Amino acid sequence: MLKELIDFREKLDNLMCSCMDKTIVVYGYGYSGRFVAWYAEYYHSIKPTYLITEEYSNNIPYEYPLFRKSLFEFGYRDVKNAVVWVCTSKTEEIKDCLETHGYIYNKTYFDINEIVYGSDYNRNESDANVQFMKYLEKMYGYDIVEAIQVKDFTNSMEGMRPCVNLSPKEIFPILDKCHCHPQNSDAIFDFGCGKGSALFSFLEYGFTNVGGVEYADNVYDILTANFKKLCDKSNEIKVNCYHEDAAQLKEELDTYNWFYLFDPFAKDVYEKVINNVCESIKRCPRKVWIINILSMYHDVIDKTDMFVLTNQFEIMTRQRVVNVYISK
Image 1 (cartoon, rainbow, N blue to C red):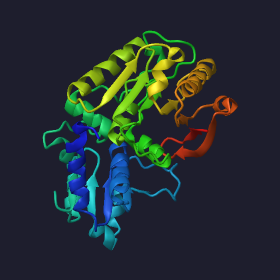
Image 2 (cartoon, rainbow, N blue to C red):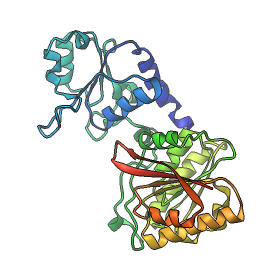
Image 3 (tube, rainbow, N blue to C red):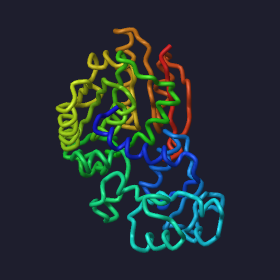
């Protein structure tokens, strides 16, 4: 786990442990609300009973468990006795609404942003975002979350994909389904690693040896700045970032037994990368896992006859198909 996130986790854990026997209302179901609801269930088996959004649309199916703030007017007994986690900017309107209905600040309703960032946090909407990567940015100056489109790469090749952020909220369930329990001998490599969001997630999950390759010059500069800052603070982790065409990596792959691909390349590059992984296994025999997300080229792996598809599922938060392979 990342030392920089210890304080973040402790703040959320302390709140959630104090609410184990309570009905939970999550007020605000944007990025922060979705993360907090996921964190509560993933780490503490707390499933919020009510989700309130201020962006309620008639297009949302009735069976989707979202409510307007008028929920507080219904007189439900379990709502009256609930604890409210405010996961959006706590405006005077929200404060008045909750206190009018009998909720007490820091006793039966809590401002999640204030708990995580302190009472003087910036309350503008873009800043009101509670999640692992945003916390690293705000508190330590990393650059992880904002996407970079291919048109903004300073150099590129045909078939490259945008640089996007996948957080532990998406990656942890994938690794769970792989029955992954990282040992000191395990190492994971990300093809097309962008700014390093997946690498941060792997480290937070428990890997201590991670690597990745990024071709775009400006993205690679951000990537290396992020991990220089991280590695300067810890000698317990190993991070190798390569700046080149992923298809050119060969012997560099020999120390890794997990490979992660989030739809990074055009098919010609993808074929070369998978071939290089196969050659690496022949050169250095070992058990290897491939996590392959949203790839249209799964037949490339099948044709190698060196891997077995062991799991296929969707990341429900983003509706993306994941294939997990293990070497024969």
